[in-house]
Length: 101
Image 1 (cartoon, rainbow, N blue to C red):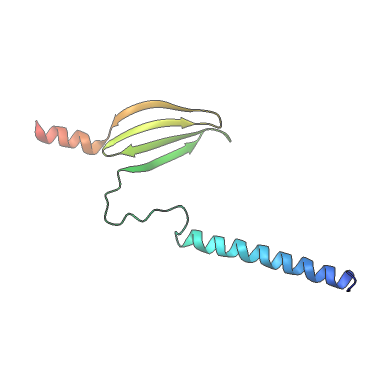
Image 2: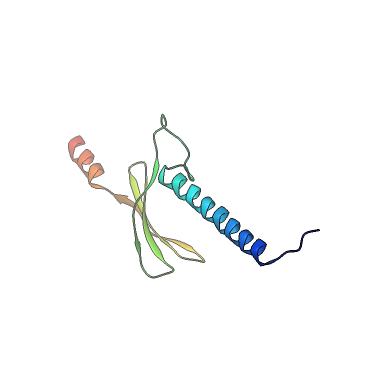
């Protein structure tokens, strides 16, 4: 039976650090390649998108969410979400309405 000495402990620490850093590197590469949390919808029209967002403070953010041709302003915090304004008309919709008149 082998005794767990200082040299073996240092080898263990270096191997552990190497494995953890390798996991972080693979995760970073996957994120840069766009492989994380994405559903491949090449042929389908995307109906939902986040147009922009702004941090109010370290806990709250304002998001402009676009669905079809309508935008909604949403305040998201740690405990609740609130719709600030809905059915925001964009410039593209205004131009379509002017053309139809």
